[in-house]
Length: 447
Image (tube, rainbow, N blue to C red):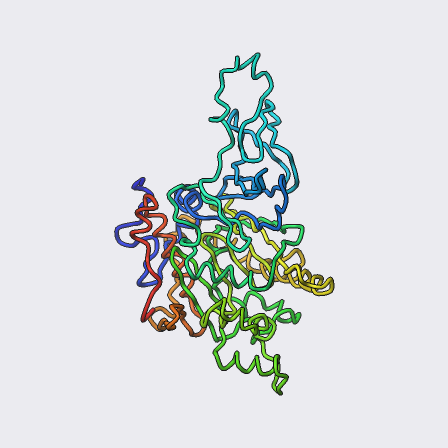
């Protein structure tokens, strides 16, 4: 590694024991370039949902870091992930965000590629190339591995990456299971996209942040979209997994769940509670078994490292990097196919008014992240590290006999610290072998 990119000898980028973070990681172009190589090009990245490409020739345009990729259903019914760059001059071979096609055509010189990325022809192949080009060697670049988990399509550009389910671990799988347990899903047409002047990591770590809700989202509370009790409860559950995956946010006790079940299933007396709307999906014995004895009590936000947020508003979001000072947010609304027309309208309404174009939440957040990123660019301000020390050393990990574990506590920054600890390990590892050997296991005991 370039020595200029090394963390200082007096303090790493992130001091795990003190919760102190070097602010340069939000502004240094060299660090950003290394992130594209060691995190995005190496890791498994969510690129699409199978419902977006149901038939042969259906495609959806996505990104792995700053590599634009085409997710397409090929003639065998398999999902291909192809880098959208013609090997002749680098021009894109597809410019639509989503659609259906029989092949991909380069508008520069007419090279034509089949749905699996194979080069199948070009103008003047005989007259100009004199039949002297190895078409098998000049197809579109394919992702090294493509795998689907419960309809969520992931791809990695690194052939050495472990299998997807191993990479996700039980925590990453649990996060996806929380969404998939609602039934067979489909993506509502129209991915909401917007850009913010912020570093992508700030948009990622905020999903664990329940400290800001009462301050940043005061306007949403005054309008009645949020309530303090229901959207910033003191009762928190943090679940941490390998490679940086985690789930953070509200959690309920077994007694609270039993109370909810008594009221909603058996019709017994009792006041409605803030967790009823989210927890009602967990009342099924099948879903509880699927999510596990700890997982079914978590009502928080799953984070799939590096940049996928699963929001319990029937939405998921990619935080796509666009340089060290800009992030593009892609919000997908996902609904069970079994919903009635009225239920579907309600689900879309909720998505639109929480994190959609009429939303009040990430509009507040984006202002904060943008100013935090700006503060990391000053020659003097960036010398001052930032503090992620809330609750450090004050809590313990509860370990269930099933193998699931969680930190059950008040509002905290355990999830943010876990994200930056993992980020640092990814950045320092030369390859997958090094990352597998040196990445931290989820904590046990005191945290």
